[in-house]
Image (tube, rainbow, N blue to C red):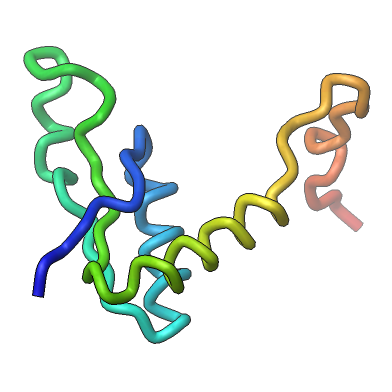
Length: 91
């Protein structure tokens, strides 16, 4: 069965997150190029990671990623950054 690239990624963290998401949906997926990240400096710093699925699963996988993208808001500059105030405090 042939495999296709769904996305090129810049981050191994994002790659593993999306890989796990696809696998939770019962899809076989692969993250290729992660071993190349150690060569950054001698290799281009982006476009090394590829998230791949079987061609037969393409439509389902793209729908899963579209749902993920729709539910993941981009940072809004108008919103105050309160993340630094959310840590645990001593009692």
